[in-house]
Length: 130
Image (cartoon, rainbow, N blue to C red; front, side, top):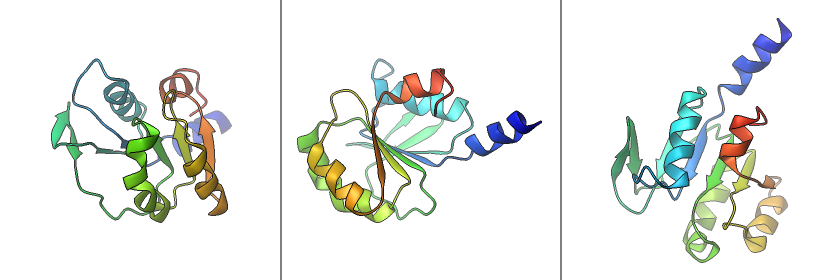
């Protein structure tokens, strides 16, 4: 029973996929679809409006509440224009996927009490660590 309720809690992690792409060969596409398949609500933000299956990819920076995770799929240079947005979401954590590691943003996040993790969202999901 305890494991069941733990799974229920895990399925309510609002996740922002930053750098989302409608290209099925991109990791951000796979992350968005697998997050949703695991029951996590997803907000996909990309450089142009598109669709990832039934998930809209938006360009805007919507005001969101109760964000659990921001998972990054853009290089550190491109991340700069999103610093203020990411920090004002005040997520519980930021996942720096391979190639997105950014010490500057990690330090800014830690100063605001936001956990940072250098990991692969897809691996975390597939191993039950998300």
